[in-house]
Image (tube, rainbow, N blue to C red):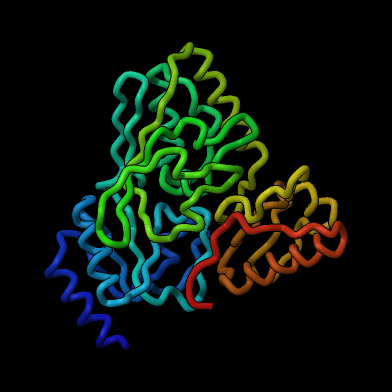
Length: 306
């Protein structure tokens, strides 16, 4: 298999302008610091390069997965069979044109929040402090009780599995709580988003942004590494509160532990394996089901060769 990987990598390098690696450890690219090697690791040079990569992979029936900054994912210890496409620097641009913001899918969400607030634009400040990229935020419809990114998304540019570049509107995106159509439709890759904001009082926006960041930081663990909230909040409940009430704070398997400060976080406090994290998460889910008859749904995406 390794010989075939190297052969494929050499072939792909001759076809694209981006970066191609083999057996790249995903632990280097995830906020958990966990994950085995990907057979192929690819960083496209631009949107046209990405389109060519997708066509090349699909022609050879090589499965692929798109990775942003590595938040909100748990990669298996055995790694990922197939290709990981990492949306890097070419997809991090942020352009503000009046009340419109054109932003690349790999741009850090919190940096985009700062840029829009600095420009006196309102509408995105409710997502201040949320980790991850614009692309990941749109996939998950990231937000807080104050609002979500889907509220201000006017258009999303994607590349399809056929290498076609398309534009999608909110009607196509089907935003709802922590969900967008991209969680169901795996045949499109986000490359760019158009956000529609409104003029606001810059001083008030700065105060709101800093307040939200402060509140978020106060409630977040300060030790260990995580992928963000492990579970979605069930209707009418807080996942963290349920886990706390079940007495699960501090529960651990190896170096994977349920955070004391925010029970909806599972932390890697050393050299936790993906298996340990997943086993702990399943123990939490089982306990919550047993005590409250509530099924916790994962917010973190669990991927790879389990």
